[in-house]
Amino acid sequence: MGRSWRWIDGRAGTEAGLYQAVGWSRIVRGPGAILQAYRADAFIELASLVEGAQMLNRLAAALA
Image 1 (tube, rainbow, N blue to C red):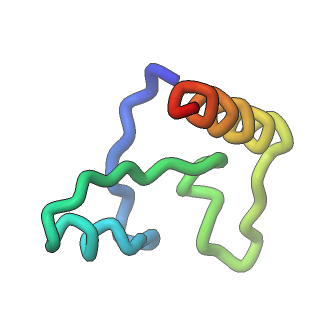
Image 2: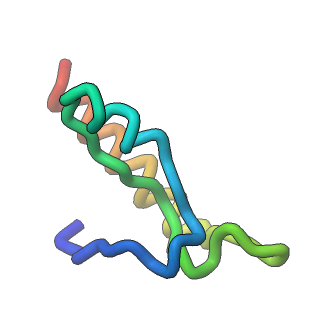
C-alpha cells in the first residue's frame, strides 16, 4: 500500500474503461509488477501474491 501507480507503455489493459463509460466507479489492482507481466517470461513473486491476497482479505472485511 502507499504506492503510486501509473500506466506503463500500454502493455496492460482491463475492462475498467467499459465501467467508466457507463458512469460506474472502478479500481484496478492486482499483485505483481506490470513490468513482469504480459511477456513470454512473465512471473509473479510469492511475496507479491501474498500481499495481493492480504489486500483482498482487508477489502472483504471492510465491505462485510
